[in-house]
Image 1 (cartoon, rainbow, N blue to C red):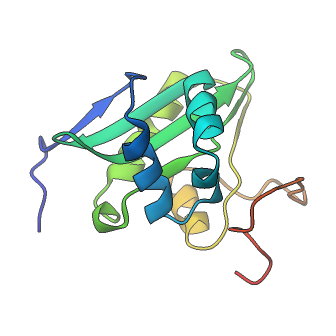
Image 2 (spheres, rainbow, N blue to C red):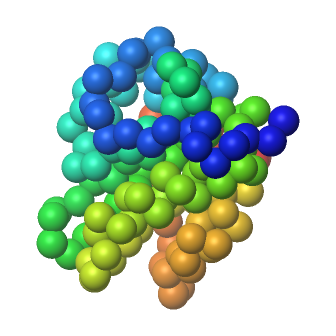
Length: 144
C-alpha cells in the first residue's frame, strides 16, 4: 500500500486521545504504556510535540525536551509498525529538529535498528561517552 504524499497530516496540537497514544506505544512495545496517566502528563509537558495522523488515526509521535537555548533531547519517536519505512519518522524528526536549529547539543538515546535511523537524521556516537541511566522499564534490556 503506497501512501499519497498528502494522506498523512502532521500536527502540533496537544489534545490527544489517550487510547490512541497507548495503542501507538503498545504497538511498539514501549513500557511507558504501562503508566498511562504519567505518559499523558509527560507528553503534555514536553517542550515540543509533533504527531502524524492518517485521517483520525494517530500513526506517529515525537517529542523534545529542551532548556530552550543550548540543549535538546528527543526522548520519544514512535510510528505504528504498519507505517514504518515510509518516511513518517523522518518527517517527525525533521519538524522537531527544525525548531532547535542552531542549538549547541541535540541528544538522543538509540538502540537496535533505531541507531541507523538516527544516523540518517545526522546523529553520531558522542565520542567515547557511555550512555548511562536509571531506567524502570525492561524494553531496552541487555539481551536486545
